[in-house]
Image (cartoon, rainbow, N blue to C red):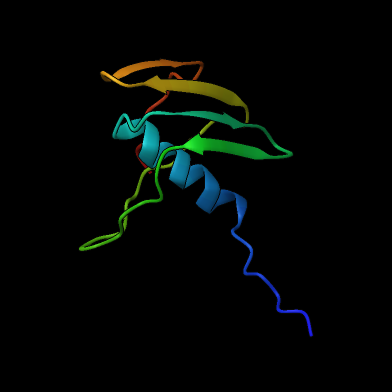
Length: 80
């Protein structure tokens, strides 16, 4: 019997990327309308409140290096 894996929707994946970029957690992040890729980073810690940030562009790439260096094509804010 197969168990169905829960799917994470696109908005939650983008929220996880926004969280990781906002906190400068090292990783490689790529997002476009067809897929998202997050190597490294972290999922949002929603205790004691839900992380409200969101990426507002449909396509982008970011690299966050140790030492709080970020290189990204995203230039907007993470505000909801």
